[in-house]
Length: 425
Ligand SMILES: [Mn+2]
Image 1 (cartoon, rainbow, N blue to C red):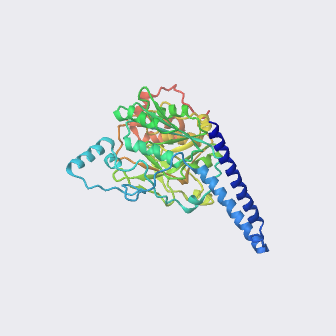
Image 2 (cartoon, helix red, strand yellow):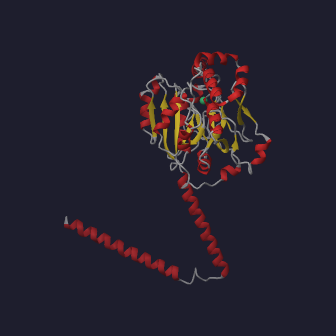
Image 3 (cartoon, protein in one colour):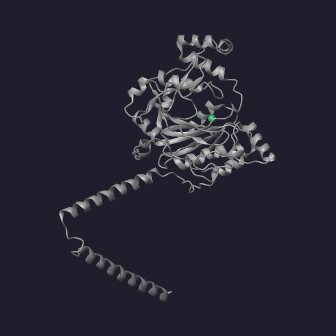
């Protein structure tokens, strides 16, 4: 025991002497006339070097703050779908049958999706100004990402989750809240719970009955602890840098709902098509169906640069960020709405009528798989749009009923004349 102690002391003493010698050497070198034969030019050069070092340090600090919770594995250019490329498979008749079955079941080619990495990279083709834009990470609000799903395929759901974890700076991401709206597919039970338990900052909430998209999202929002609620669909892939512009805009103006540019992921090949030209904005027709329009001249003139957010009358619905406090002030969604369809227009009308605004940020890009067809029936679409018209359209609702006679019947059947609707609070 004692021998061991004295051996240790000996080692420590030697290490001490060695450190002292090194320090002395450093002092001698630093003090030697060799580096300090100073001329004015060299001083300036030194200052430049120091300034460069400082900016490198700052960039490194920014880089630290921009770092997501998990990093993607190194890209593998040979892997299927890497960089958002299309996947084309040479299939045997049996495999072809499996592929067709998956399309039949999900309205998305899940056979192909299953072959693509859950962590694939997406090529960033955003405008240069977007890619070089700097953010003050210490001042951006935090966000909770809310993803509701019903019987979603495994690989599209999990790719969405991993994509959020691998592209959202850890300092900004409070949590991902998954709401299972009473799915019955077996892999969404314990297998999903197990997978989720192995990643940080993901919560899984399950409803006790089928609630529909709107209520499922609102249930998710009640668990959110972030400053901003970011709603995503359950078959998305985020492009790096997607969240910062949304959060920065909400920090500037808390009464703004901000949407990313929604890029298309092909339902069949999973090719990621990034929209590189001017984004489209949302509108609607008199049947209250959502439509895309090009940016009008007046809005184009109002904006000072092509990376300024674009005001949009309506949103597509699936993907947007809103300050939690402002969403509550707005009265959230119309709770009487079921499933999906119409709720996006209702919320769009609500935000504009209640003094807020709705914008699309050209620097924020999220890919979405638009399915081959609507994956499940939505018998309540008409009912939802009737509610939106009754609450917000005043006398303009006549155009809606004229263009959409079945809506009149829905109103007679479902709306009591005394019914009071929620407007601005
Ligand atoms: Mn969708």
